[in-house]
Image (tube, rainbow, N blue to C red; front, side):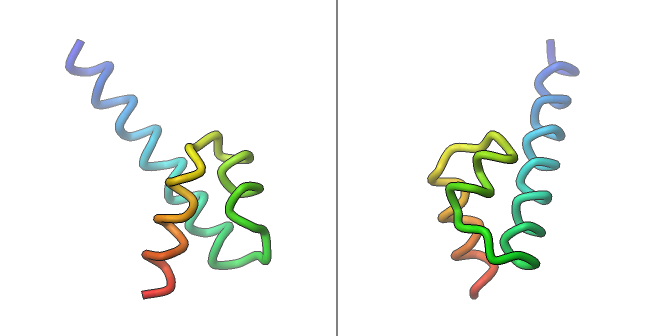
Length: 53
């Protein structure tokens, strides 16, 4: 069970990293990025804020 949870965490972090790259390198809006990476909209807003600081 613990291995499964770790795998899910790694997958989520991989999605976040991909979303960060899309935000930083493209002109896509947050909704498009989170749609591609299948993340909650709040994650896109948070990732963009993190990148801009």
